[in-house]
Every structure is written in structure tokens, then in C-alpha cells.
Length: 483
Ligand code: NDP
Image (cartoon, rainbow, N blue to C red; front, side, top):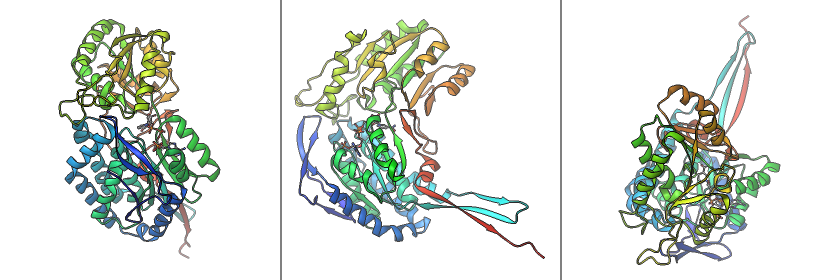
């Protein structure tokens, strides 16, 4: 199936008529073409957005909220079609797309449909000076949203929904590897009555299309989710133009397990936090740190549970682990497994590619567990972003904390313990933006979401996102005293 750019409410071919292949990773075959857009296409998208801005930014909150709600409802109505498209494009199990990706995309729109009606700004009375200050929170104008391939519609809408709720118009680019559901979103927006030009979706490569969005002098804010290296490059391009930037980047998250935890719940959740979406979630706990007392027991039980996971065709309902997103990414992930031994690691389970019947050319990999003894090894320092976790033991709280913080990343951490004092000590000292205690990936969309250190700058979610997508303007009025 071929897809087109969505500009000014219409589906159009790229100006230069260049196209890219779109692959189905479950069978390793091209199944469609997508625009290989250039800066001329981005310019057209910008012009459509700029034209729509004055009217959209003056639309009442009620109207905006209603349109966002309609989009949310339509996403849920088309859940099966969208989930099938996401699974085919990305390789993720259909069950995951149905239970997580698509419902969450709908929730993103519904959440910001509600949040914008509750968003408020501050007022400060300057007592004794006969003055009052109030702050306007005005939309920025045309903003850019760029998202990755791992949770395609989920992360794309997580940016677009707050941007348009706040009154901005958007030029957006999904990953060229997974463009399909973004394309379908354009149709949904038209059906929901989103005015033309409010959302424009341009497909293409990061290095050309993405770059053109970031470098555009009049796109004044960029919300980006992707790799740390790309984030650093975007920051360099955007800084001289003083653009507002929100960067949600990579992670190397510790999953810290103490002997006093609820063992069964921890074990079941750890299988998920290690391998959900083939381990291709920025929040996956890829470094499992286990208290020495239960290390051997955990190792045995974890290997047994992981060996029960079914690697298979993503469209099969019983599949737990689908295909890796691309041949290139499969090779990258495999290259880390291949250096395990020279890095002092020992493969406890997995490590090999898998051939699936009737999907022989698909990109499949066993869930892989590697035991390491040194946290400074590349397996524990670099983001692998695949179905690969490492195991390491620790003796004391201090050692666990030191190991957990010993990485350049600081996105999330998971802590398993029933000790309240330890929970508080770790909560205060872990250098991450998100900490889950006795759970994983339990999300409340009102909370600030993002990372510290090389995992990003700024926070998404709730009012944080609405603050990012608005410009605060303070007005100070002095009044006369009664004579
Ligand atoms: P990339 O950084 O490669 O790409 C992310 C997006 O940026 C894609 O749309 C890509 O386009 C685009 N892009 C690439 N180069 C440029 C450029 N020069 N200018 C503008 N845009 C560009 O990341 P991946 O897609 O490989 O995603 C995986 C990464 O995302 C992992 O590091 C993961 O940790 C991170 N991530 C972070 C999350 C968080 O919330 N912190 C959540 C999910 C993922 P294209 O793909 O078409 O080249």
C-alpha cells in the first residue's frame, strides 16, 4: 500500500516524486512506498500550518476539545484496522498493538481534550504597589513534532495532541520505518473535522525531511523523541535559532530487585519490562540488578519464564515476541550479543536469530539474557534497544545505587522492595526522571515524563506538555489608588 503526505487536509505526492520502500519486518518484504519528502514538501506543510494558525488559535477551547475527543473516539472505532497496520509496519505482536499502542493513542487525544479545558495561568498581585500581574499562555505558532519507530502512533500522538490542544499548528514527521498509522491518522483527522492545515504530516528520512523541519527558521519549537545522538544533533541545529526544544532520548534503565519484594509479581513484571515490544521501549529495564541473596533463584526462575515466551509471527494472537523492526536494527542488536563474551559476559539464554515458518525472511531474535560482572562493559553502558537484558548481582543498598547511577543515561528506574526507608532513599538518589516502585510502566498521563542526563531535556505529559507548547507572557497593570 502506498501512502502520501498529508498537507492542508489533503493527501499529496512528494513534489520531487521520490519514494522510499516500506518493509513488513515479519516477512522481510517491501509492501508499499512512502514519500521521500524534501525541504520543498516541508515548506508546503509549513505554509499550510501558518495559514491555519490565526483561525485555529482563536477557536474556543470547547471546540478544540470536542474535535480532539472526536479523534480519540474514531481511533477507538478503528482499533482493529490501526492495530493490524501498526503490527504489520513495526513487527510488534498484534495483541500488544490492540491492548497498548492504539488505546493509548486514543487516550492521548482524550486526555488533552480534557486537560486543555483545565489549563490555567498565574496571576500575581503586587501588594502595596497597586499592581496586578497576569500571565497569558499563548500558542507558539507552527511547531515541529518528530517521533521514532518503536511505539509509532502512541508517541506521534503524545506530541501532536497537546500541540494542537494548546492552539498550535503542526508539521509532523513519523519515523520513515513505521509511517503507516500516521498516514491513517490524517484520514481520521479529516473525518473528525480538524480544520485543514492544523496538522500536516510529511514522510521521509530523518536526515532530509526531519532535518528540514528542525532547520526551518519559522518552526519555533521542536518536540523530538528518538536516539540521544540524533537529539544532540537537533539541539545543535536548533540552538542558534533559539527554538524551544523538548528532547526525549535513549535509556539504559536499571531494574533493581531486593530480596524483600513480592517475588512472584516482580518475576512476572520483569519478564514484561525486559522483553515487551521486543525490548524496543525506551523504558525497558535492560540492566537487571539482583540482591545476592536471591540471585541464583532469580536466575533460574527468570530463565524458565523467558524460555516459555513464544517468538512468532506478529499477527498470530499467541505471539509474545514479534519481529525486530528492521534488518539493520536486527544486525545492530545481534552485534551486541556477539561481543558478549569478549566483554566478560555469559549468555544464559537465547542469543540466536529465529526462523519462523512461513516468515523465513522476517527479522526474529530470541529473547536473550546475559550475565555480566562489570557494569562498565558496553552491554551495560550502551543502549541496545532490543530483546537483550543483562543480569548482575549486588550485596548492599549502596552498591545497588552506585551501579544503577553508573551510566550516562537517566530515563527511568524500577525498584522492587517492600522497605519504605529504602524506597525513599532510592527515590531521592536515583538519577532518573521516572521511578517505578513495585510496578513497571504504569502510566498516569498527568505526570511529568522525561529523563535526566543524556536521556533528554524537558518533560512531556500533563500540564508540562501544555506549558511547553505555549509561550508565557506576563502583563503588569498598575491602577490608581482611590483619591
Ligand atoms: P532516531 O533518533 O534515529 O530517530 C527518531 C526520529 O528522528 C525519526 O523520525 C527519524 O527519522 C528522525 N531523525 C533522524 N535524524 C534526524 C535529523 N537529523 N533531524 C530531524 N529528525 C531526524 O531514533 P529511532 O527512530 O531509532 O528510535 C529509537 C530511539 O528512540 C532509542 O534511542 C530510544 O531510546 C528513543 N526513544 C526515547 C523515548 C523517550 O521517551 N525518551 C521513547 C521511545 C524511544 P527516520 O527514522 O525516518 O530516519
